Image (cartoon, rainbow, N blue to C red):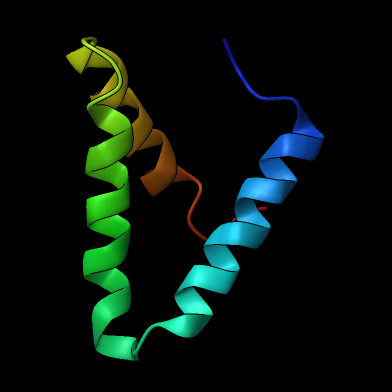
Length: 62
């Protein structure tokens, strides 16, 4: 189950808008809370950890 690219773009846009509305000091905690809420939607801990590693690997990449 994965979102098609156009829906991923929409997620990106909504995240960008949410981050723009926040103070700089609140952005990091927002992203952590958002990530934890998404992680709660699965019982696959290995996948969540894999996604954390994937996000780290993609920093600075498109």
